[in-house]
Length: 158
Image 1 (cartoon, rainbow, N blue to C red):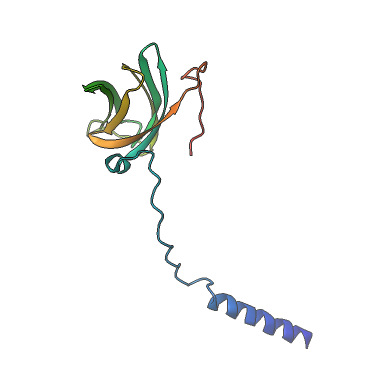
Image 2 (image 1 turned 180 degrees about the vertical axis):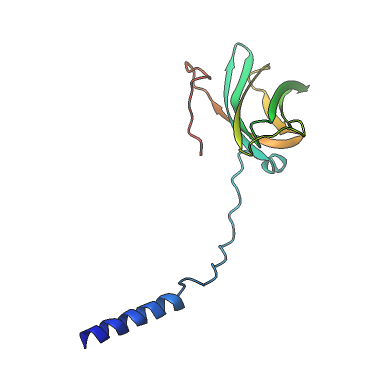
């Protein structure tokens, strides 16, 4: 008789499990998505990809170093920096250009982090902006502490 009671309890438990969301039930729709956190205060910049990089200013030269994910190891990254002055404000524009491999190139389809480093002479209070193949990106610059080397300085990504 005890065996029958255990069997009935197990059957009721299984029935309740299936009824309340066991296998075969559709996943519930997630709650309204939270907006992404932007690292910039302007709406135009908040729409682009976020590039986090290290920034160092020494002797009138800004150095930006980091890495960008490229679609394959066969893609190449070209990085260029230029300055633009409007009134008393100097803007440093960094252009990341991802160059596609030749059409007949056989290449592993693996996202590849590719390092970059660019230096540009500009005033210390210069404003930074960037593009990737012409599309705006958000620069999240992490200042390298004084006395640290930009090549060896590590920061938490997250």
